[in-house]
Image (cartoon, rainbow, N blue to C red):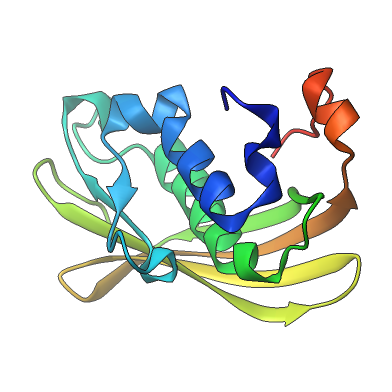
Amino acid sequence: MTDPSQFLSAEGRISGLLEIPLHQFLGVRLASASDPSAGLLLEVSEASLNQARLLHGGIVTALLDVASYLALVPSLAVGEHAVTHDISVQLLRPVSPGARVLFQGRALRVGRRVAFLRAEARVNGTEVAAAQVTKARLQVSLDAAEAGRLPAG
């Protein structure tokens, strides 16, 4: 994020996610610019392949985590941030180059300090991966953000 105060609004959080260099390198984009809860899209390219020339499981894991965060963004208050406390991922099917993967998250239970989320990855409607994600909700002051002390996501 170029501007630390970005995390204070939902729009800033979402644009900040899209500005992450890894996401830009992979070509990650919102499935719907007007509805971030619609999830993320990834076109599987050379940059996202493993040695077997299939979508790399680490990329799948990272984007399931991001999709779960998108599902939590509407619940975050001004000055609040969420970081991953635990993630469990199931890689169900291999994904070939050229496939378009949709990553979507949803909140299962959102408490004052902890949120439980689920995220799924689909290709043409078929589930290829899923994750259970627990995120800790943290209060972060703008002073901490400006000093570069934002918690890792």
